[in-house]
Amino acid sequence: MSNLILLSVVLITLALVLYSVAVWLNRRSRRLTVANIVIFWCAVAADTLATRLMGARVETIRWDLHTISGYLALALMAALTLWGTVALLRRRDDWIATFHKLALPIWVIWVGSYITGVYLGVQRVSGS
Image (cartoon, rainbow, N blue to C red):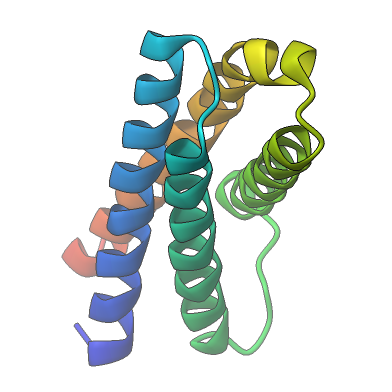
């Protein structure tokens, strides 16, 4: 496995951990906090960098279920994080209090994409 792929795997797994921590802490408290948004932004950064590194490895993008769901999940997480940031900056209590209701379904989509990526990666490594 190349160093580029290894770094991508580490970063995307870091994104999984950070998204999971942020989503479940937010769900538990039922109120968005600055700490939650900081963790979300770190996850978006790790996810974006990992996606860029993986994309740099291929000449053309193959638009399969994993690729489409991955880009969709990244876009949804980035939009959710931006929306949460705006909610906190504008002190929109209604948005802050309902953030967790949007975060969980988007996280499920993201985890689904992560799982398809692991499955495809294992197939490539094993030569199947």
